[in-house]
Length: 179
Image (cartoon, rainbow, N blue to C red; front, side):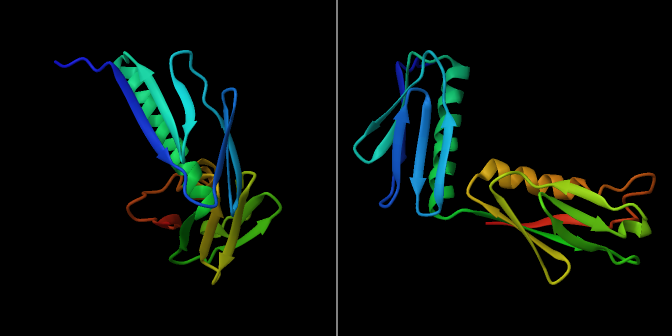
C-alpha cells in the first residue's frame, strides 16, 4: 500500500466572498452574511493562498486524512451558504384531523395533530428563517447548513407517531426537498 506523505484540499473562494483566518477561527463573508467556525487541530494546517483556502496535513494517518476532508466539506458548505444559502421544504400530511402550523417566536407550533388538545412545538435555531405557506408547506432557510438541517429535523421530529402503527397512521411533517 502506498503511503501518502501529504494531503492538500483546496476550497475555492469565488468573487464577492472573502475569507479570513484568525488563529483557529475561519470567517467567511459573502453577500448573504458571515459565518465563523473553529478548526482546531495540532497537526492540520489551514492557510489562504491566492483565491483559495488550503487544508494541509503531512504524513497523515487514516483519521487525520478523514478530518482534513471533513474540514474541506465544512468550508465548502460555508462558502455555499454565504453565496446561495440553504433551503429545506417540508410538507404537513394528514388524513382526518387537519393540523394547523404557526411560527411563534423561536418555535413552530403544531395544533390539532391527531386531534390532540395539547399543541406540539419544534425549536427554531438562531439564524434560521421558517415560513408556513399554503397552510401545509414549511420553508426552512438560512446560511448555516447545520442549523437549517437541525431545525428541519426538529420540525419533523415534533410530529412523531406514538402508540400507533406507523404503517397505518402516516400523519406528520416530512422533508420533501433540499436546495
